[in-house]
Image (cartoon, rainbow, N blue to C red; front, side, top):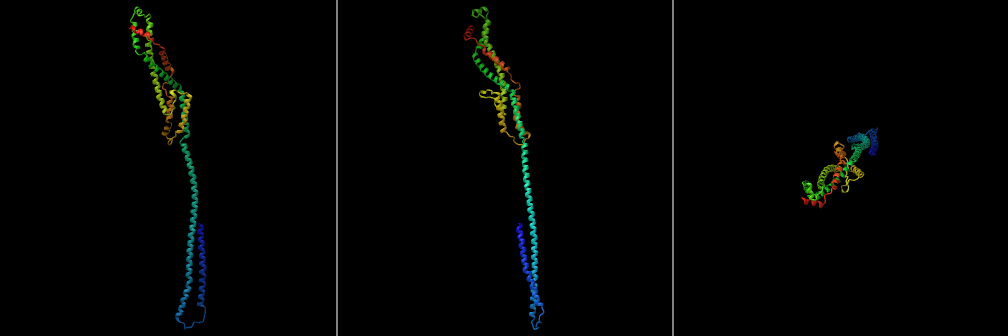
Length: 356
């Protein structure tokens, strides 16, 4: 733009010089020549010249003398116009220069603003990353899972007792069902036989070929003893079964919250080392699949760690009263006594029934 304005100024100046060279010399030459011709001393004119001729010469002289003045005024006006244009052009050049300077300044400021914006963006991302508390929250999760594993290790013996009791309850329940079928009506018959034997004296019993009343009654009482043991064992099994049921209900809730299942095929309890490894696998899955949603407000933090805090507390207090082997041993003792009692032979039993 500056080059075009410079070319325009040079063109105007050249035009002005050309105009000046063409106009000024002609006017200067014309004026003196005319005046010399008109004013130079000459021979007196004849008085006989007509008046019209004299008037015409005067008019021509006036016209010739006036022409150089008009051209000069035109030239002055042209120069004034050119001067005005030059001033305007200079103003435009100054304005363009100012705009270019402003443009360069704007570019510099824009570059600085871009750099500042980039720094602010990076800082904002850094602050957002810090605000999400990813690293400290990850450490909290690791600590919570470690606490859960410690709690599981602490109660693992009680879990083993529960599953051993569960196995005993299953076995004892099956045996009780078999004994109920085996006893059938023998219970009522045993009561009648004992009452009959106690109602006879020694001589009457000898006639019935019963040499020892007490031995015979003791043999018959095996039925009642086995019945009593069976009922006692059934009560013990129901108590243990209720405790096991409460344990399994709580443990199912823990499984829904993310605690792995400790059971393997046929509902058998896996070894403790395998279960700890399964908990660590669950921890890795939880860390990869879970992410905090939203800013770390109290509500978001609670929702993020709700299950882990629940597991940590409930695993530690899974048992109000931890099971011991006392109930297991007592029930197993009754079970063995019940199994070891042999009922009277069928022949002897039929013989005693025939005496009634």
